[in-house]
Image (cartoon, rainbow, N blue to C red; front, top):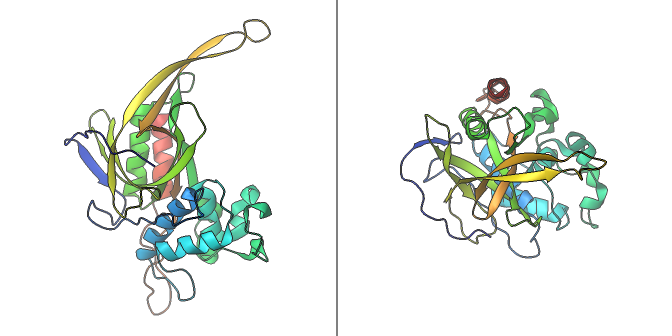
Length: 286
């Protein structure tokens, strides 16, 4: 879906999702046909496959990102959604999906949609339940007390260094509502200003199994609300972070501790600080 990346700065600090580098650790499943709207399921599968690669995975569940995606294609209709909904389904099932659970989203040949998913339900419930899967807005309006340039980069740094898997929901920057979902694996940024230079993502639409770096731009536009009669006219600015013709609408994060290779008696935790980092990031932006 994306065009080739334009020139990307070769300078700046880098940060990566746990266990990931430019060469390895990331997961990239691609659409295969009759699944044109399932980019959110592919992004979900990338994160779930990455998480399982660092966990002890029981037999009898999908093992890889490709197997997870095939399971989701066999379960859901070819329709749009958000990756956090997919994560909640995969890890916690219908209960974790809450109000996002809609039987009509499932294929007609799925006998009991409410019984699908939930492959890590017990582990999820032991570690925060559905609250282990979070989302955040990725654009700024001037009437909101928030610094987009610093805030978004800081959030991504906190997420990546705290063991979280991350997806991005994108919207066409030309004014249409054509949307897309990709998986975020790394970032290049200015350490002093915390301005993002580029993002490393995998994309289910590109037909390739590779990590791609995309240059990031900040676009600010003035918008007007009100008619000057019943509603006063208010002018305000909105700043968007854009890449390859899309702006980032929101991020979704899995902040679930890895399920460690078990000792003789029990599972251990490999990571568990993501939620604390998110809270700290939000405090800094206030």
